[in-house]
Length: 152
Image (tube, rainbow, N blue to C red; front, side, top):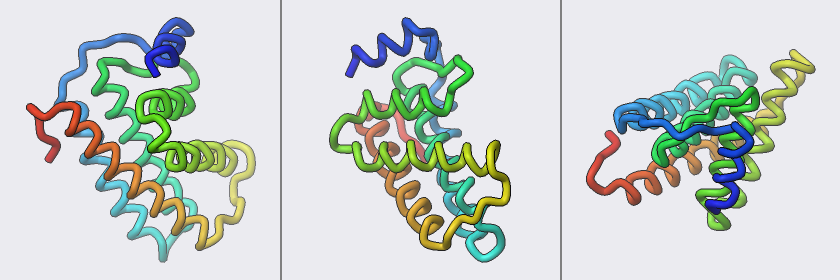
């Protein structure tokens, strides 16, 4: 676990930084709001619904990195967040991390390579389900590792 984190640090993908717990709280709270926005967009815009489900995971991953006193600093911050999350959360989260990474790649594809690509209703529902699970489990993980502080 820490070997991967040290590797990310040595490769200048993350840097140690003093980050207030208020920033962690803001990211987690925004992730919960992103889930609601994703759900609300299910009837309006598939791409927006998918994107907000992904953003919920991304913000939660950022909160996780912050909780360890690091900040992503490279040009591949989204990938770095996935790698860091995988290193810290371990095997218990492997399926959710794999979904997070697939969502990252798919979002990149429809954002930068193939705008207008069709996203099925099933893909969106799966993305929202995965994002909800990830946010909840990482929120619990952060609180368990920071019992003196509460995320509201």
